[in-house]
Image 1 (cartoon, rainbow over the protein chains, first blue to last red):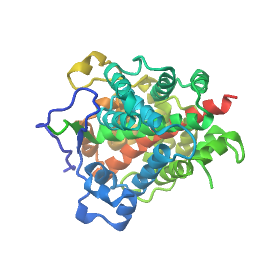
Image 2 (cartoon, rainbow over the protein chains, first blue to last red; image 1 turned 90 degrees about the vertical axis):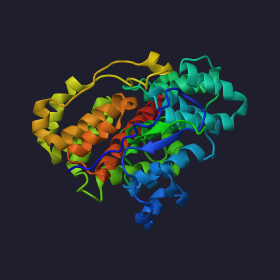
Image 3 (tube, each protein chain N blue to C red; image 1 turned 180 degrees about the horizontal axis):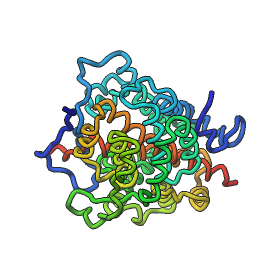
Image 4 (tube, rainbow over the protein chains, first blue to last red; image 1 turned 135 degrees about the vertical axis):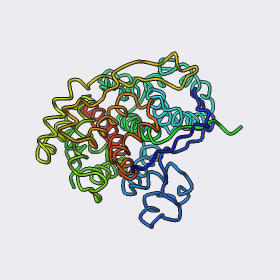
Amino acid sequence: MSEQAIHHPELTRPNAFTQAELGWVPWLEPKAVEDLTEEDYTGLVERARAGNPYFRLLVRDPVVLGARTRADNDIFYNEDAGLARAERELSAAATSRTNGCLYCASVHSRFASIQAPSRRDDVQRLLDEGIDAAQDDRWTAVIEAAAALTATPSHFGQAHVTALRAVGLDDQAIVDVIQSAAFFNWANRLMLSLGEPTPPAA
Amino acid sequence: MSDLIDELVGIVPGDRLDALRAKRPTARSDAQTTYDALVAAPADLARASRAERVALGYWVASLSYAEALAAHYRSLLEGLDAGALAAIDAALPGARTTGPFGAYPAGPLSAEDEDGLRWAAPAELREAVGARLAAALEHAHLLTYRPRESSADALQALLDAGWTTDGVVTVSQLVAFTHFQLRVVAGLTVLKEAN
């Protein structure tokens, strides 16, 4: 008898991109809190993440989860030069919009709006109208680069580098665009394939 | 310390890309740590064998037209399971498409739904690599081109083919991580050539 995936037939699945706080439920059994080892806590990086079913599912491969989480933190939160925080979140949101990850797009569009409060409507337009929605030149360049790198096959090319440089990004910032988009091609696939989003709390 | 991304992009100590990558040192070292844990030196070979892991990396890189990474995995798979390599190569032309595409949950986004190739492993491939790896290749195809169509049923198909829950987590990480790895290589390769 094989193990069983978890279905959630009672849930109303969100069907639109939003900046609201969605929930997420797993399709496989997370590791039980009482079974977590010290190695697992190392993989969780922050002990509080033991309360989160997504991380407690991924901790079934603790070394990989730990490396994933540290890479994530360095790509998005290391502010030694490079791209502004808001634009790293924008790259993550554009990637998530392209792949169709409602959950990831909700988190990172919200983070982009928190980092750039005056741009909340611009962020919403990315969610509502997609990656081709009108934006200023700088955001257009970041969104187009992230989307091009997300396509299979990738069509990220010299024209994208030229466009990013033209709106003021140096090569360190371009590395941040590349790595934040690449990272969300990792994160989107985990979030989309191991569980599903749930509606915002009423 | 070997670093596969540096090797595939052609980054050498002291060059421009080396300095750029050095500003995100943890992302750099943990990309390699992830690769080592998933592919190069995995601790648990019961949940997924070395050959299964390498075959999945080769499959995802090939489906993604990531030539340098595919060539790397190809040389590894040749030494581990030449039969699987031949069977996968035979299946590739019928499996390659473009993405991402797929259907959203019914609603306002349905206008963006896009149809495409929903691939099932042909009988010859299934016979050559077995039901377990064939199921993982089908799942990797789903995650590569239409991740938005993932489902609990897709995971059940993996469990029914003999993967454990731990094994499904590792297969998912391997497929998803390879999509990160191949895009870092693609992006940095373009940036390296931009002067």
